[in-house]
Length: 282
Image 1 (cartoon, rainbow, N blue to C red):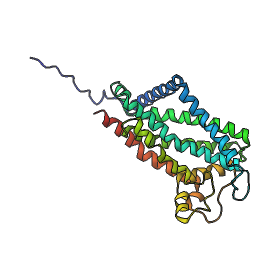
Image 2: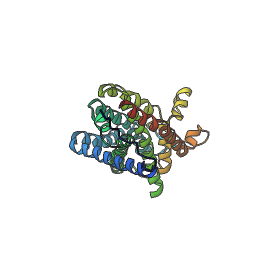
Image 3: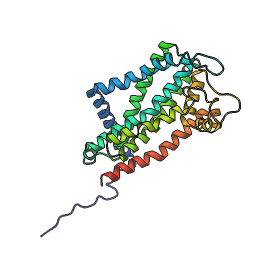
Image 4: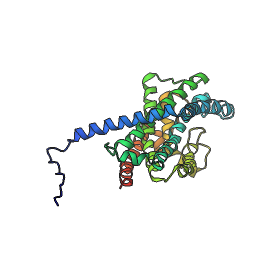
């Protein structure tokens, strides 16, 4: 009996690095389109994702607005809006975790692995689509915020810079969500992890000043990345609540802190997510 084997391609026939990068980008954009298309077929989830941020602006602005004094004076709604932007950015981790866990438990990931697409494209598609959803959420929140009295005071460029920082942090956090979604076994387990994200926004300066906290709790709050992102946004928007004087390094250099945190999250969780996705297919 004669056994036929497929000859291995020669080095000259292997795709170049640029070709592999182009395929990865093209496959990733296809999967971004798949995620956005799925939202169109699930209008309930899409409406909830878009309406919830607007409700948060109205409820927090009018419920807490008359009860909390802003340090140094100023309107609480202007103090509040950067904190709400940050809250939506951080809590988005669990939404992506549940979407990825849902795809994994229903066999969608196995189907992707059987198709001739690059392995990196799947997590890149999931995280890319999450940034698009996040940008839409931020736009709606900003519109509602303008209606209730929030204003950016430092012009167009600092305002754009603040929203870019929010999008950058959301993209970095989306890789955390992608990794968690690949690690957990199903949506139920992912749902149980949701309360773990609350401390990141509650133990920060997003909604209340940290000056009144006990020393150990204030230390945690000052080094919380949510506090740095909130402070950077308040500074760039020209909103009240930017700490001055002798403050912790992350609050004295909030923009640099946000960039550092984002870089660390990407360096750690991008390879972890790609490796976990690849290994689960073996």
